Length: 202
Image (cartoon, rainbow, N blue to C red):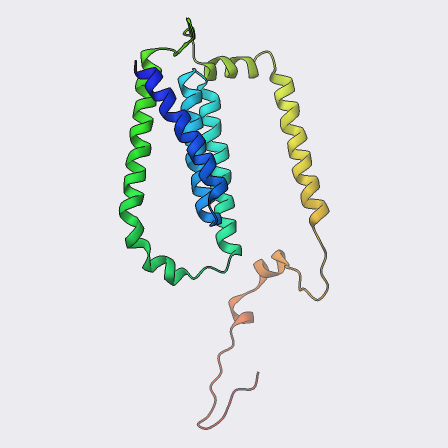
């Protein structure tokens, strides 16, 4: 049965990726193994019919890890010339890994379309609608005001964090937008015609 095969494939890859995330000494390699673990965990969620959690894991966690990866690269003393020189050496393994992930996505889609996986003597019943549709209907109908209140709380927290971290520094010329808009070209540019061997007085 394809569902059982895909389940054991994703579970094995999740465990192996987690072990390699801890065992890798290079932080960049650890982040890449962690991204692979997230992808395979999303495949497991997709198998049991939790499409929302699968997409959330890929979009939020993989996106956040990718941003963290960029911060790590920027903070580390990385020689970008060396990275460009080794790009061709890692091109073929990277393409193989991308093809493997694409094959995993196709296997997960086939297993999801074939039906729920069997847990012991019982199988996961198929829902009439996807959980993304059901969750959207619940959020924007029954829990609409709570959802909007959570959004307002997050907005206030974001504005408060910006206000608390803003610092007024001395010795910095503030920007005057209205003065910049009112400035004319003849006020900013002065045409000088110095003689031969003479400098320009600024």
